[in-house]
Image 1 (cartoon, rainbow, N blue to C red):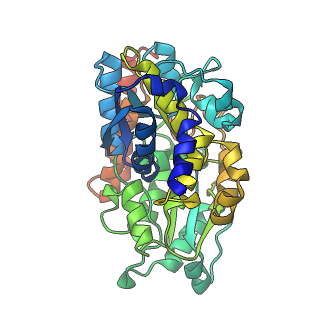
Image 2 (image 1 turned 180 degrees about the vertical axis):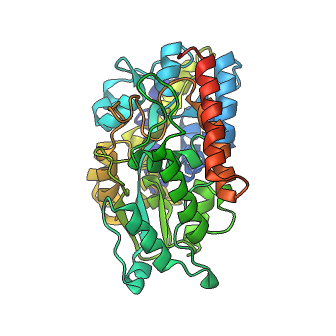
Image 3 (image 1 turned 90 degrees about the horizontal axis):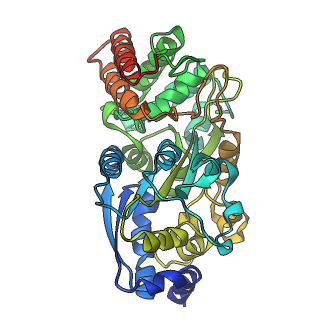
Length: 426
Protein backbone atom coordinates (compact mmCIF):
# COMPACT_ATOMS: atom_id res chain seq x y z
CA UNK A 1 0.00 0.00 0.00
CA UNK A 2 2.80 2.43 0.89
CA UNK A 3 4.63 1.77 -2.36
CA UNK A 4 1.42 2.45 -4.30
CA UNK A 5 1.26 5.87 -2.63
CA UNK A 6 4.81 6.56 -3.76
CA UNK A 7 3.98 5.58 -7.34
CA UNK A 8 0.87 7.75 -7.23
CA UNK A 9 3.02 10.71 -6.21
CA UNK A 10 5.34 9.99 -9.10
CA UNK A 11 2.50 9.79 -11.59
CA UNK A 12 1.15 13.19 -10.62
CA UNK A 13 3.97 14.97 -12.42
CA UNK A 14 5.52 12.35 -14.67
CA UNK A 15 3.18 12.38 -17.64
CA UNK A 16 5.58 14.16 -19.95
CA UNK A 17 8.57 12.20 -18.69
CA UNK A 18 6.89 8.92 -19.58
CA UNK A 19 7.19 9.90 -23.24
CA UNK A 20 10.96 10.04 -22.85
CA UNK A 21 11.09 6.25 -22.66
CA UNK A 22 14.62 4.99 -22.14
CA UNK A 23 16.26 8.37 -21.56
CA UNK A 24 19.34 8.33 -19.30
CA UNK A 25 19.91 11.32 -17.04
CA UNK A 26 23.20 11.97 -15.24
CA UNK A 27 22.65 13.98 -12.07
CA UNK A 28 25.39 15.64 -9.96
CA UNK A 29 24.32 16.00 -6.34
CA UNK A 30 25.86 17.10 -3.06
CA UNK A 31 26.34 14.24 -0.61
CA UNK A 32 23.91 15.59 1.98
CA UNK A 33 21.18 13.48 3.52
CA UNK A 34 18.16 14.69 1.56
CA UNK A 35 19.98 14.33 -1.74
CA UNK A 36 21.12 10.82 -0.85
CA UNK A 37 17.55 9.90 0.11
CA UNK A 38 16.34 11.11 -3.28
CA UNK A 39 18.22 8.32 -5.00
CA UNK A 40 16.04 5.76 -3.22
CA UNK A 41 12.77 7.65 -3.59
CA UNK A 42 13.39 8.20 -7.29
CA UNK A 43 13.48 4.47 -7.98
CA UNK A 44 9.70 4.76 -8.29
CA UNK A 45 10.15 7.55 -10.85
CA UNK A 46 12.28 5.29 -13.01
CA UNK A 47 9.78 2.45 -12.64
CA UNK A 48 6.95 4.73 -13.75
CA UNK A 49 8.66 6.64 -16.57
CA UNK A 50 11.47 4.43 -17.85
CA UNK A 51 13.96 7.26 -17.30
CA UNK A 52 17.27 5.88 -15.97
CA UNK A 53 18.99 8.05 -13.37
CA UNK A 54 22.78 7.99 -13.03
CA UNK A 55 23.84 9.65 -9.78
CA UNK A 56 27.17 11.34 -9.15
CA UNK A 57 27.32 12.15 -5.43
CA UNK A 58 30.15 14.49 -4.44
CA UNK A 59 31.42 16.26 -1.34
CA UNK A 60 30.29 19.90 -1.32
CA UNK A 61 33.55 21.55 -2.34
CA UNK A 62 34.31 18.97 -5.02
CA UNK A 63 30.80 19.27 -6.42
CA UNK A 64 31.09 23.03 -6.76
CA UNK A 65 34.44 22.79 -8.51
CA UNK A 66 33.40 20.09 -10.96
CA UNK A 67 29.95 21.49 -11.75
CA UNK A 68 31.29 25.01 -12.26
CA UNK A 69 34.02 23.84 -14.61
CA UNK A 70 31.75 21.56 -16.63
CA UNK A 71 28.90 24.08 -16.94
CA UNK A 72 31.10 27.06 -17.77
CA UNK A 73 32.85 25.19 -20.57
CA UNK A 74 29.77 23.40 -21.90
CA UNK A 75 31.37 20.08 -21.07
CA UNK A 76 28.06 18.23 -21.12
CA UNK A 77 28.96 15.79 -18.38
CA UNK A 78 25.69 16.30 -16.50
CA UNK A 79 22.02 16.68 -17.40
CA UNK A 80 21.03 17.98 -13.95
CA UNK A 81 23.24 19.74 -11.41
CA UNK A 82 22.98 20.81 -7.79
CA UNK A 83 23.67 24.52 -7.40
CA UNK A 84 22.50 27.22 -5.02
CA UNK A 85 21.65 30.87 -4.61
CA UNK A 86 25.14 32.11 -5.33
CA UNK A 87 25.26 30.52 -8.76
CA UNK A 88 21.67 30.37 -10.02
CA UNK A 89 20.99 34.04 -10.88
CA UNK A 90 24.51 34.60 -12.23
CA UNK A 91 24.57 31.46 -14.34
CA UNK A 92 21.03 32.11 -15.55
CA UNK A 93 21.94 35.62 -16.69
CA UNK A 94 25.02 34.21 -18.45
CA UNK A 95 22.98 31.59 -20.31
CA UNK A 96 24.81 28.69 -18.64
CA UNK A 97 21.60 27.07 -17.37
CA UNK A 98 18.08 26.71 -18.73
CA UNK A 99 15.10 28.73 -17.45
CA UNK A 100 12.53 26.61 -15.60
CA UNK A 101 8.92 27.26 -16.54
CA UNK A 102 6.61 24.66 -15.06
CA UNK A 103 2.87 24.20 -15.45
CA UNK A 104 0.17 25.38 -13.06
CA UNK A 105 0.08 22.01 -11.26
CA UNK A 106 3.59 22.76 -9.97
CA UNK A 107 2.17 25.70 -7.94
CA UNK A 108 5.11 28.06 -8.21
CA UNK A 109 3.48 30.41 -5.68
CA UNK A 110 3.86 27.68 -3.04
CA UNK A 111 7.67 28.04 -3.18
CA UNK A 112 8.79 30.20 -0.26
CA UNK A 113 9.22 33.75 -1.65
CA UNK A 114 12.75 34.31 -0.35
CA UNK A 115 13.92 30.97 -1.76
CA UNK A 116 12.31 31.54 -5.16
CA UNK A 117 13.76 35.05 -5.42
CA UNK A 118 17.25 33.82 -4.61
CA UNK A 119 17.14 31.28 -7.44
CA UNK A 120 15.78 33.70 -10.04
CA UNK A 121 17.07 36.37 -12.40
CA UNK A 122 14.72 39.12 -13.55
CA UNK A 123 11.72 37.13 -12.37
CA UNK A 124 12.65 33.85 -14.08
CA UNK A 125 13.59 30.86 -11.92
CA UNK A 126 16.73 29.09 -13.16
CA UNK A 127 17.06 26.46 -10.43
CA UNK A 128 14.27 24.74 -8.51
CA UNK A 129 14.77 24.31 -4.76
CA UNK A 130 15.11 20.75 -3.51
CA UNK A 131 15.38 22.11 0.01
CA UNK A 132 15.99 25.52 1.55
CA UNK A 133 17.61 26.63 4.76
CA UNK A 134 18.72 29.39 7.02
CA UNK A 135 21.02 28.97 10.03
CA UNK A 136 20.17 28.56 13.70
CA UNK A 137 21.48 27.26 17.01
CA UNK A 138 20.89 23.58 17.79
CA UNK A 139 21.81 22.75 21.36
CA UNK A 140 21.49 20.02 23.96
CA UNK A 141 18.99 21.42 26.45
CA UNK A 142 19.74 18.60 28.87
CA UNK A 143 23.33 19.84 29.02
CA UNK A 144 22.46 23.53 29.29
CA UNK A 145 19.96 22.75 32.05
CA UNK A 146 22.54 20.68 33.91
CA UNK A 147 25.08 23.49 33.56
CA UNK A 148 22.59 26.16 34.64
CA UNK A 149 22.88 28.22 31.45
CA UNK A 150 20.27 29.45 28.97
CA UNK A 151 20.56 29.85 25.20
CA UNK A 152 18.25 32.56 23.87
CA UNK A 153 17.03 33.62 20.44
CA UNK A 154 19.50 36.06 18.84
CA UNK A 155 21.75 35.66 21.86
CA UNK A 156 24.95 37.61 22.31
CA UNK A 157 28.16 35.89 21.25
CA UNK A 158 29.45 36.35 24.79
CA UNK A 159 26.56 34.31 26.16
CA UNK A 160 27.08 31.69 23.45
CA UNK A 161 30.70 31.34 24.49
CA UNK A 162 29.64 31.08 28.12
CA UNK A 163 27.18 28.31 27.32
CA UNK A 164 29.82 26.45 25.29
CA UNK A 165 32.28 26.72 28.17
CA UNK A 166 29.70 25.45 30.65
CA UNK A 167 28.89 22.37 28.54
CA UNK A 168 32.48 21.62 27.50
CA UNK A 169 33.53 18.31 29.06
CA UNK A 170 36.18 16.74 26.81
CA UNK A 171 37.11 14.13 29.41
CA UNK A 172 33.66 12.68 28.88
CA UNK A 173 33.66 13.21 25.12
CA UNK A 174 31.49 16.34 25.00
CA UNK A 175 32.65 19.52 23.27
CA UNK A 176 30.91 22.81 23.97
CA UNK A 177 30.61 24.03 20.40
CA UNK A 178 30.96 22.19 17.09
CA UNK A 179 31.36 24.65 14.21
CA UNK A 180 32.54 24.52 10.61
CA UNK A 181 36.28 24.74 10.05
CA UNK A 182 36.84 22.88 6.78
CA UNK A 183 38.04 25.32 4.09
CA UNK A 184 35.63 26.28 1.33
CA UNK A 185 33.50 29.28 0.40
CA UNK A 186 30.40 27.25 1.28
CA UNK A 187 32.05 25.35 4.13
CA UNK A 188 33.90 27.28 6.85
CA UNK A 189 33.23 30.64 5.20
CA UNK A 190 29.45 30.13 5.30
CA UNK A 191 29.55 30.17 9.09
CA UNK A 192 32.46 32.59 9.44
CA UNK A 193 30.79 35.18 7.21
CA UNK A 194 27.71 35.23 9.44
CA UNK A 195 29.96 35.86 12.45
CA UNK A 196 31.73 38.67 10.59
CA UNK A 197 28.38 40.18 9.56
CA UNK A 198 27.11 40.06 13.12
CA UNK A 199 30.22 41.94 14.29
CA UNK A 200 29.54 44.66 11.71
CA UNK A 201 31.89 43.46 8.97
CA UNK A 202 31.38 42.66 5.29
CA UNK A 203 33.31 41.24 2.37
CA UNK A 204 33.40 44.45 0.34
CA UNK A 205 32.70 48.15 0.62
CA UNK A 206 30.42 50.16 -1.67
CA UNK A 207 33.18 50.27 -4.31
CA UNK A 208 33.57 46.47 -4.09
CA UNK A 209 37.00 46.76 -2.51
CA UNK A 210 37.73 43.95 -0.01
CA UNK A 211 37.38 44.94 3.65
CA UNK A 212 38.98 41.89 5.26
CA UNK A 213 41.72 43.95 6.94
CA UNK A 214 39.22 45.80 9.16
CA UNK A 215 38.68 45.80 12.91
CA UNK A 216 35.33 44.02 12.54
CA UNK A 217 36.93 41.07 10.74
CA UNK A 218 39.76 40.91 13.26
CA UNK A 219 37.37 40.91 16.21
CA UNK A 220 35.13 38.28 14.59
CA UNK A 221 37.94 35.90 13.58
CA UNK A 222 39.68 36.17 16.93
CA UNK A 223 36.36 35.30 18.57
CA UNK A 224 35.77 32.36 16.23
CA UNK A 225 39.27 30.93 16.70
CA UNK A 226 39.05 31.36 20.48
CA UNK A 227 35.58 29.79 20.74
CA UNK A 228 36.34 26.77 18.58
CA UNK A 229 39.92 26.41 19.76
CA UNK A 230 38.93 26.30 23.43
CA UNK A 231 35.54 24.60 23.31
CA UNK A 232 35.44 22.69 20.02
CA UNK A 233 36.53 19.17 19.09
CA UNK A 234 40.11 18.46 18.01
CA UNK A 235 40.75 18.80 14.30
CA UNK A 236 37.93 21.28 13.73
CA UNK A 237 39.72 22.65 10.67
CA UNK A 238 38.61 19.44 8.92
CA UNK A 239 34.95 19.58 9.93
CA UNK A 240 32.02 20.78 7.85
CA UNK A 241 28.33 19.86 7.80
CA UNK A 242 28.52 16.09 7.47
CA UNK A 243 31.39 15.67 9.90
CA UNK A 244 29.66 17.73 12.58
CA UNK A 245 26.33 15.99 12.02
CA UNK A 246 28.05 12.71 12.81
CA UNK A 247 29.67 14.16 15.94
CA UNK A 248 26.38 15.64 17.13
CA UNK A 249 24.50 12.38 16.68
CA UNK A 250 27.24 10.61 18.64
CA UNK A 251 26.45 12.92 21.57
CA UNK A 252 29.76 14.77 21.31
CA UNK A 253 28.47 18.33 20.72
CA UNK A 254 26.77 20.61 23.20
CA UNK A 255 25.95 23.20 20.56
CA UNK A 256 25.97 23.47 16.79
CA UNK A 257 25.27 26.64 14.80
CA UNK A 258 24.61 25.66 11.22
CA UNK A 259 22.01 25.02 8.54
CA UNK A 260 18.44 24.62 9.74
CA UNK A 261 18.13 21.54 7.53
CA UNK A 262 20.41 19.69 9.97
CA UNK A 263 17.49 19.41 12.37
CA UNK A 264 15.91 16.85 10.02
CA UNK A 265 18.81 14.48 10.68
CA UNK A 266 19.44 14.86 14.42
CA UNK A 267 18.84 11.63 16.30
CA UNK A 268 19.97 12.51 19.83
CA UNK A 269 17.41 13.37 22.48
CA UNK A 270 16.92 16.74 24.13
CA UNK A 271 17.71 19.03 21.17
CA UNK A 272 16.39 22.58 21.38
CA UNK A 273 16.60 25.43 18.89
CA UNK A 274 17.29 29.15 18.98
CA UNK A 275 17.66 31.88 16.40
CA UNK A 276 21.24 32.72 15.39
CA UNK A 277 23.47 34.82 17.65
CA UNK A 278 24.15 38.44 16.81
CA UNK A 279 26.66 41.00 18.00
CA UNK A 280 24.58 43.96 16.88
CA UNK A 281 23.85 43.76 13.15
CA UNK A 282 20.40 45.41 12.84
CA UNK A 283 19.19 42.90 10.25
CA UNK A 284 20.69 39.82 11.92
CA UNK A 285 23.24 37.44 10.47
CA UNK A 286 21.51 34.13 9.79
CA UNK A 287 22.15 32.90 6.27
CA UNK A 288 19.79 31.98 3.43
CA UNK A 289 20.49 29.12 1.05
CA UNK A 290 18.88 26.46 -1.09
CA UNK A 291 20.31 23.38 -2.67
CA UNK A 292 18.55 23.47 -6.00
CA UNK A 293 18.43 21.58 -9.28
CA UNK A 294 19.29 23.14 -12.64
CA UNK A 295 19.70 22.06 -16.25
CA UNK A 296 22.99 23.00 -17.95
CA UNK A 297 22.46 24.72 -21.30
CA UNK A 298 23.08 22.45 -24.26
CA UNK A 299 22.21 19.09 -22.74
CA UNK A 300 20.35 17.00 -25.34
CA UNK A 301 18.12 15.71 -22.54
CA UNK A 302 16.82 19.09 -21.41
CA UNK A 303 13.13 18.21 -21.60
CA UNK A 304 13.51 14.98 -19.63
CA UNK A 305 15.75 16.77 -17.13
CA UNK A 306 13.16 19.48 -16.55
CA UNK A 307 10.45 16.85 -16.11
CA UNK A 308 12.50 15.14 -13.42
CA UNK A 309 13.23 18.42 -11.64
CA UNK A 310 9.55 19.32 -11.75
CA UNK A 311 8.73 16.07 -9.96
CA UNK A 312 11.67 16.12 -7.53
CA UNK A 313 10.83 19.63 -6.25
CA UNK A 314 7.05 19.21 -6.19
CA UNK A 315 4.37 18.65 -3.56
CA UNK A 316 4.14 15.12 -4.95
CA UNK A 317 7.76 14.45 -4.04
CA UNK A 318 7.15 15.56 -0.45
CA UNK A 319 4.30 13.06 -0.30
CA UNK A 320 6.53 10.38 -1.82
CA UNK A 321 9.15 10.82 0.91
CA UNK A 322 6.56 11.05 3.68
CA UNK A 323 4.92 7.81 2.56
CA UNK A 324 8.14 5.98 1.73
CA UNK A 325 8.78 2.91 3.93
CA UNK A 326 12.44 3.83 4.44
CA UNK A 327 11.96 7.49 5.35
CA UNK A 328 8.69 9.05 6.56
CA UNK A 329 7.50 12.53 7.43
CA UNK A 330 10.50 13.45 9.54
CA UNK A 331 12.71 13.08 6.45
CA UNK A 332 10.84 15.26 3.95
CA UNK A 333 12.82 18.16 2.43
CA UNK A 334 11.98 21.45 4.12
CA UNK A 335 12.58 25.16 3.58
CA UNK A 336 11.15 24.80 0.09
CA UNK A 337 7.33 24.94 0.07
CA UNK A 338 4.93 26.62 2.46
CA UNK A 339 2.45 23.77 2.05
CA UNK A 340 4.86 21.32 3.69
CA UNK A 341 4.59 23.20 6.99
CA UNK A 342 0.79 22.87 6.94
CA UNK A 343 0.81 19.07 6.66
CA UNK A 344 -0.41 17.46 9.91
CA UNK A 345 1.88 14.47 9.39
CA UNK A 346 4.90 16.77 9.15
CA UNK A 347 3.84 18.94 12.08
CA UNK A 348 3.55 15.85 14.28
CA UNK A 349 7.23 14.95 13.89
CA UNK A 350 9.01 18.25 13.14
CA UNK A 351 9.69 19.97 16.42
CA UNK A 352 12.14 22.25 14.63
CA UNK A 353 9.66 23.55 12.04
CA UNK A 354 8.73 26.83 13.72
CA UNK A 355 12.37 27.73 14.42
CA UNK A 356 13.37 26.87 10.87
CA UNK A 357 10.60 28.93 9.30
CA UNK A 358 11.38 31.89 11.57
CA UNK A 359 15.01 31.77 10.52
CA UNK A 360 14.22 31.58 6.80
CA UNK A 361 11.69 34.41 7.01
CA UNK A 362 14.05 36.67 8.97
CA UNK A 363 17.09 36.20 6.73
CA UNK A 364 18.10 39.44 5.01
CA UNK A 365 20.11 38.83 1.82
CA UNK A 366 19.37 42.26 0.29
CA UNK A 367 22.14 44.84 0.05
CA UNK A 368 22.40 47.26 2.99
CA UNK A 369 24.65 50.15 3.95
CA UNK A 370 26.68 47.71 6.03
CA UNK A 371 26.79 45.00 3.33
CA UNK A 372 26.45 46.64 -0.10
CA UNK A 373 25.85 43.45 -2.07
CA UNK A 374 23.24 40.69 -2.24
CA UNK A 375 23.86 37.61 -0.11
CA UNK A 376 24.35 36.81 3.56
CA UNK A 377 27.01 34.10 3.77
CA UNK A 378 28.21 34.85 0.23
CA UNK A 379 28.36 37.76 -2.18
CA UNK A 380 26.30 37.38 -5.34
CA UNK A 381 29.09 38.26 -7.78
CA UNK A 382 30.89 35.91 -10.19
CA UNK A 383 34.27 36.41 -8.48
CA UNK A 384 33.10 35.45 -5.00
CA UNK A 385 33.86 31.71 -5.17
CA UNK A 386 37.50 32.45 -6.01
CA UNK A 387 37.74 35.04 -3.25
CA UNK A 388 35.94 32.80 -0.78
CA UNK A 389 38.16 29.79 -1.45
CA UNK A 390 41.33 31.84 -0.99
CA UNK A 391 40.14 33.29 2.32
CA UNK A 392 38.82 29.92 3.48
CA UNK A 393 42.30 28.44 3.35
CA UNK A 394 43.69 31.28 5.43
CA UNK A 395 40.93 30.96 8.05
CA UNK A 396 41.58 27.22 8.36
CA UNK A 397 45.27 28.00 8.87
CA UNK A 398 44.39 30.47 11.63
CA UNK A 399 42.10 27.92 13.30
CA UNK A 400 44.74 25.19 13.23
CA UNK A 401 47.40 27.54 14.60
CA UNK A 402 49.51 27.39 11.45
CA UNK A 403 49.12 31.17 11.14
CA UNK A 404 48.19 34.00 13.46
CA UNK A 405 44.82 35.62 12.91
CA UNK A 406 46.56 38.82 11.89
CA UNK A 407 48.73 37.07 9.30
CA UNK A 408 45.76 35.11 7.91
CA UNK A 409 43.69 38.28 7.54
CA UNK A 410 46.53 40.13 5.84
CA UNK A 411 47.01 37.30 3.35
CA UNK A 412 43.26 37.13 2.79
CA UNK A 413 43.05 40.85 2.05
CA UNK A 414 45.93 40.66 -0.41
CA UNK A 415 44.42 37.67 -2.24
CA UNK A 416 40.95 39.21 -2.43
CA UNK A 417 42.35 42.54 -3.59
CA UNK A 418 44.31 40.87 -6.39
CA UNK A 419 41.25 38.92 -7.58
CA UNK A 420 38.89 41.92 -7.55
CA UNK A 421 41.45 44.21 -9.19
CA UNK A 422 42.13 41.71 -11.97
CA UNK A 423 38.37 41.37 -12.51
CA UNK A 424 38.21 45.11 -13.21
CA UNK A 425 36.23 46.33 -10.25
CA UNK A 426 38.80 49.12 -9.67
